[in-house]
Image (tube, rainbow, N blue to C red; front, side, top):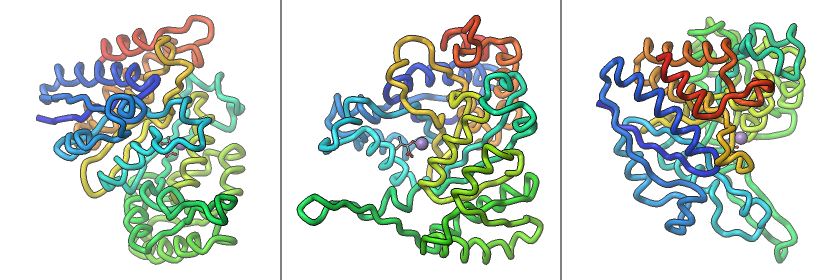
Length: 349
Ligand code: IPM
Ligand code: MN
C-alpha cells in the first residue's frame, strides 16, 4: 500500500497531474501496488478557497503520506502586484520547508526524437545526460528579507550552514558514484562568502568519495558551458537560486521544459513535480505536455524501489516521442492533446 498526496495546484497543474495519475493507475493495475490518492489544495486555488496558499490540512496529509505528487503553482494576478501579501509560491516554499526537502534532483536528458526541436545543434546535444542537485531549503530563498530606509531599500540575505551544505553534498557524491563519477560544484566563490563555505565543505566531503572526480566552476561560466558543451556534465551540485536558474536554462537543451521531471528529497516524505510552472495561458486548452509530470511519477516509482515499473513508464514516454504522440511544442504538424498523450502512455504501460 502506498498513499500518495496529490497537490495538483494551479494553471496546467491539474491537467498534467491527471495524466500522471493515469500512468500510475496503469502501473497499479499491472503490479498490484495498492496506490491510494488523496487530493489537497496548494497555491492560488488554495488562496481562493481558504486564504492560505498552504492550508494546514494539506501539510498534514503530505506528512501522513508515502509521497507527494505536485503539479504547479502560480497565477498571473499575483505576479504584477508587488504589494500582494499572500502569494501562491509561498505555498511551494512552505511545503518544501515543512517536508524538509533539502535536495531537489533534476535530471537533464536529451531525447533523440527531440533533437530537431532543440535550439542547440544536434552535435552538441547527443548524449547529454546529467543531473542537477539543487539545494532547496536554504540560501537567498529563505534568508531574512525586507525593506529599510523607509522602504526605498530592499534586501534578501543568502545564508548557509555547513550542515546544510554537507547533507546535499553527500547525496550528490553518492549519486555520482552510481553514474560517471564526475561532480561539478557550481558557485560564485570569487565573490560570495557562502560559496566559499560550499567549496570548503564539499572539498572535505569529497575525501569520502575518492572515486568521484570533483571540479568547481563559477556559475557564470557554468551557464555558458551548459549551452556550449552540455555533455561535459554528469552531476551538478549547487545552491538554491543558481540551481533554479541553471535548470531552466538546461531544460532548453531537451527542446521542451515540458519534458523535465524532478524529485525533492530530505528528512521526511519525498515530493515529485515537473520543473515547469503553471503556464496559465495554456490552462484548460489541452495543450500542456504531461510528460514531465508522468516522468516525475516514474521518479516516484524509482524512489519506492519499483525499478521495473519506473522503467515501464519511461519506455512508454519514449515510445510516445518516437511515434510523434506529443503536444504542439514537440509535434508542430500533428500535435496530440494533453489527454491523448496521457492515454497513449498509460495504454502502453
Ligand atoms: C521552481 C520554481 C519555483 C522556484 C518558484 C515557483 C517559487 O521556479 O520550482 O523551479 O523558484 O523554486
Ligand atoms: Mn524554477
